[in-house]
Length: 475
Image 1 (cartoon, one colour):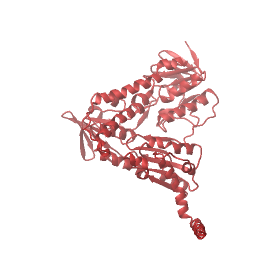
Image 2 (tube, one colour):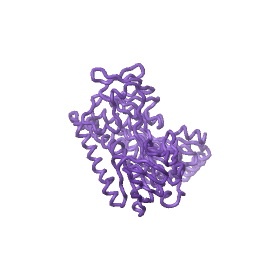
Image 3 (cartoon, helix red, strand yellow):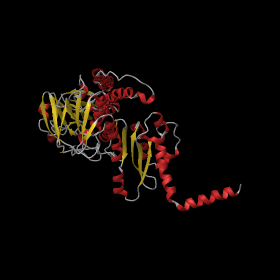
Image 4 (cartoon, one colour):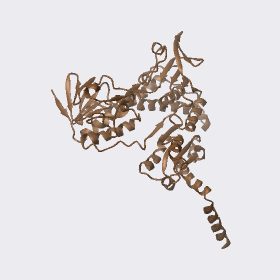
């Protein structure tokens, strides 16, 4: 049987589910193809389980360090399997929102299995040909496996296995010091494992401002995590049941190895050649409208490379829906893309780094910075570490923001809103912030531009000095 759909969505992760749900609610005829489980990497192996485990680890850490508030307890008894059960329970609850039944109730035809294009208007799955006016490729990505000698034979974990562990490894080496590696490394350490994080660059989280990443690294090390920078694993051997990891001239002996070394787009076996879709090293090639080399076939999410975040995948899906179902006029706008790393302290970012800003605007750059140690709410919570750093032009145009400290992932959104609507930094300075809240750091940081401008304006200082002298003379 041949059925014609307005949109055939290939992949039931973040981008695919947003597109299928929105399309069906617009009364379009939608087919959704998924190889394994709806919800994709984010629900089963990424955002949801990692943040659930992070929270369990934070509870353990806060119990362990309660003495700084005058609250003394014995060291917590950690039952790792129960912490993992919490993770799986959260996945189960959220899975209900991503269930087959929910999407079928919306009118989506859901197909499970591996399929491939037979031509640019046909996707075949389980012997059935799905004909579509438009297609969306949203097949996501998978963990990259580095070519380390002996790694395959020794065995390793990725984000696809780590949340199903029944027992906590007593010692863990994390290869890769990006957000996932740092988040999970800190979590396992707080749950009682001895952790070593191996970073190939000269800092952890190399996409972040160096001084912000340094605050996180200092905290990791203060918790007993060993961080090796400018280091690469060369070889793994199994000796007496332990994994011996050769890193430079050192040998690290651990129970388990966790890989966090990047992602690979899932483009194999889709028959993209038959459809005429061009693929590059980063994944499926798309234009500004997220069209592939075949205009009625679109791409979104990790499979197209770029910003590999759930919220970006959802945004891209919305762009595709407008272009595929209505008129192909919408361009993806990546000018304001925020993200956060959920270590403790958290680290969030939007826009340019200081280096990028100076490369683009030269001397027309102002750096505004304020420390959490000068924010009363942070001090009340013994969280007076880290800072906010805003990067603007001298006229107040916001170029970027970097926050490292308590709840940085929440605090960044005030700046995101301002940048999205092209407000200048003065808008953040001028609104009233509740006292005492952590959000005061945004206002205090924004105020720095006014202070800097005043400090450099000798004429204004002279005028004000004369004015107040005159006022005093009237008394």
